Length: 233
Length: 121
Image 1 (spheres, rainbow over the protein chains, first blue to last red):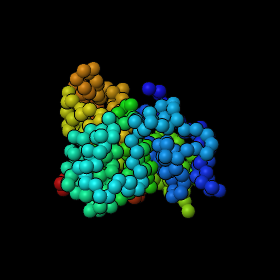
Image 2: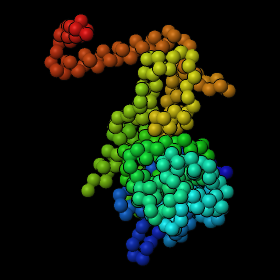
Image 3: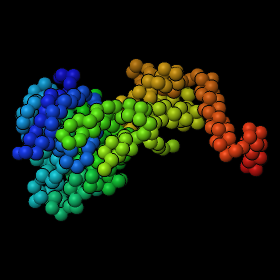
Image 4: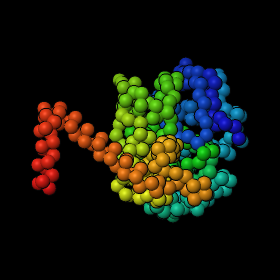
């Protein structure tokens, strides 16, 4: 296991004439919970998709455990996309079974336990669930893997505050010194106490990457307040 | 006692304060075992590394100590807890004097007010 879990050098991504990422240099260690924070269209999802190997870089490189994204990295990366991606006709329990088949590091027992705490029945078909409940199911599936890197793209946007607290507690309980959780979100104040580090991203560039308590100490304000100042419209 | 955090100050400083308050109030009595970092971090809704940093500071102050196999404990040194209690009370007194001074109270008036209020209660 390398000390550095994720690293980017000069990472760029073009979509036609549009630049989504412009020369990102980034390094993430292990045992961290990191917030990827930026306004809409700043490149958060593009960065996460590159880390997954769902997109390929236009220039530069991104490495997980020192290697380009591929089968080896996918086995240790748990990804929660920002959209519904699971077949809507499937029942919750079928999804749990599918994940158990797919991923060697998936704990079905844990998933069943979490789903029951959230009062989601295994017999429900995904298409009959509300938007927020669907998101909870996806998040439970992503968090019940014992991965090294969790990439959570807007994991708490659609869920109610009580479930949000439960999810954040779950992320904390799941904490391991070997694993890192990267969370992209706009809901900074909700996740701020949970974070080690904050990354501000704007127009495809990393604006800052600092420990949360460092920002609070030196700027004299919360990361949420600081974000509002930096990205003031 | 639940955990609340305010905006502009480092979270670890606030955790240190709140853990000290728990020790002084007797919620964590002398010699008591403190829950493991991960458990307490989840309860407080804070990052485990931040909590670890707060624990380290309390260990440096001698308020907590770690037994290699059995966990982390509150000091059994009651005089140390007493000293901390005094320190925290002094801080509150200073805050009170500062705030009443802003309202235009003299020190004598502020002291007088405390005396009267305490007699009423």
